[in-house]
Image (cartoon, rainbow, N blue to C red; front, side, top):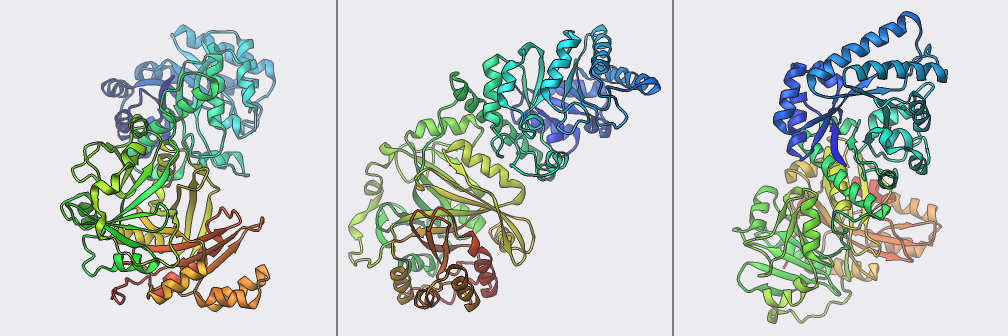
Length: 629
């Protein structure tokens, strides 16, 4: 299948769009009429530009409101078609997309539509051109690709075929199995778009909320698998209408589009029983977190980790790097090296998470998949944590995601760190492991990072929710694997006054805002942290009064929660969730301590407005007034 994208999917001028499309590795593009009309390129200029860029022009589109007309209006429709044919030949494409009519006075009589397309097909064939009919989901009389297929069969001309569009079909719940009844030779073009599952007007849904395949909730992989089973080999072309994409960087959107098509074809091949084109998504577990602390002159980060319940268990044998650990497999690295990736990251962003290590079954396969998806893979890092070849993927905010398998992890900490300097003092209530990482990303990059994580790793996208911030709305999406060993949240601000937006400004871009650590006794951990002097977020009394009313909690339990500023949630199945938030370091990073009981799988979304309001009330202050010692 030929990878293509419609110019309407990107922002910018037509020239900028085509340059971005070519740079992203696409082989072809659809020329959207509005883009051409607004351009200063002539049709011949366009043909020469696309040739220079190595792009094939697969279609000129759309030709609207053609069929079912009578009298002078019908004559005018054919005159318009002739003008389009002139343009097509000059710009170097042989295919015109005709979308089903939305005109009130157009006839829906089947025979008349067949006659219109037979005449149009004959005129196109006389000039060596073709036309393809598309069923708009909101078409007045034709809104189902099965009806289009029947019309094309009756026209019975090799110059007239079908355009399939995944959104138009799937939004109307037309069975995927219906594709297997089509003759693949009659399908001239397949357009792809995903979308979040919504109950709204089809036109508005299509015009504003389409997204790249695998960024939404439609069964697009199953749809393409059905096409593979019938032997379709033509163009697979993205046609995305999305307000966020139009305001984003065209190069970023084009790269996302190419990545989505590669992953989509691989997923579809697996479903169709065909040979896969990529190594599989890696099962992944969070193995370690690395902080850049070059600017942490006062040791606030180390003091906070100690107060939370982690211990320093080693010093790097050659560099200014410390290893901290909780119970289980909780490794935290503090990197104070100025001449390192962590140092460069710190100069740009200040203190924060500069890298994470993820355990995968095979690091070479994971790196190969990432490279095939167009991700930046670093394989020869001068300040790597190991002398082995450990590949890393460039991640959010310029951070790294190290890909570690059993071979790489075997003896890693012993080789790199002097573990004789272990503090033997016991930890009363240990941190048992990582719970999740929370990232703040630019709103226009939100879907890009969703695609990044879910195409590289075997992660499930949970339901997207809107979080209410005193300064606006924050869009949030959780991603997690089957056993919870890798959990991430993506958060994108819809308002410039939100705390998420302030994080972006202070951090100079996207990054990880907080790390959640897991305990098995929130009250014991809270007591330990309070005795250690950990500054935690103060929660108002109104919250606890409301909590008691909502869940029918007894007075003593609520009093214990309030005494330690613990937030609480309970799901319909009886799962319970407890949260404590630290104050922020340098106004950008904070910790969360959580306990999950009875298989609670959420993230305490019901508490987010309370937490965000408390952080705003506290000024999200840096902890310059709290230092260890």
